Image (tube, rainbow, N blue to C red):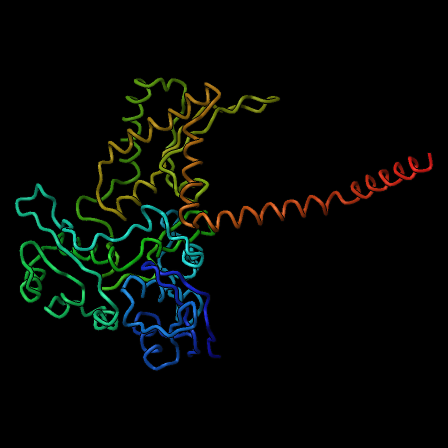
Length: 415
């Protein structure tokens, strides 16, 4: 069956508002080339708010990738699955990537967040090596259009820096060099770290920060975040270089050593410690926890109680190492233990502002993802549903009250 559009109007990062119209085989092949081919063949076309046609070649590349992801989310294109297990429990993840993007800000024209929707700093030097490096290096980009970048969009796996590709990427300068051919040779000579930093910079320019899928694991509730659509040119890095992460027994020993010092310095007497080897509990936003505080359970009718306890989750610390590379494990353990002790002292005081702030941060993150317009819409909808349910459940009482009021009014008139 053909996939029939038009789709809803989509507000793009550049400020343009377009929709996909036409009909195409369902689904088009995944990737930028599939959508570009359908647009070139006239199976699909772009319309503005007034129905006027818009050439895809005039769109900035960042606009195009939003459009492509939206086409996948609407079923016009294949929508790839993440293909990785849950980072917390290891169970298979369901759900398609682009359909799991929060599309409300793009549909509502609510791209106003000062960080998520901030314009990319084109025409400014962006460091590929830090200033303190013996040979600091920066790159300068300009906005690239679909027409200029077609070769890379249609065959992204063929990224081999040439003068033509430098122009397609919108690279204006690399260090002091401004000639495309010499920039290409300089890019070819970058070490692995410099090349990765260059690709990161191009991806920041070409992919809007909101193009990420939140995939919730049905087994443990963890939120897994993945790029949507998948990024070209390279596979996701499988963790950083450096020593392997400690095994569970070594990790537990380090936790206990730090806990003795932290508990002694910060008043942790009587607080138990447990290192969890399995999947971590998640906060209300689905983020696997590094640690958690469990208040004491008093003895009740002969049922033994339990002292207060701090849990440390091995898998979350290991996942950080595997996904982001090595970090200062000892410092992270100390900070986590101190943080959980703050919850303990707050519990003893009868007020936990740290917990309140953590819940407020989860709410802020959700609001940022959905946008203010969508949050207000959902709040009003929930209020209406709540009022409707209240009236449905209490209508006999309202009917009785109405009858009593009518009887009272009738009696007053007779009197």
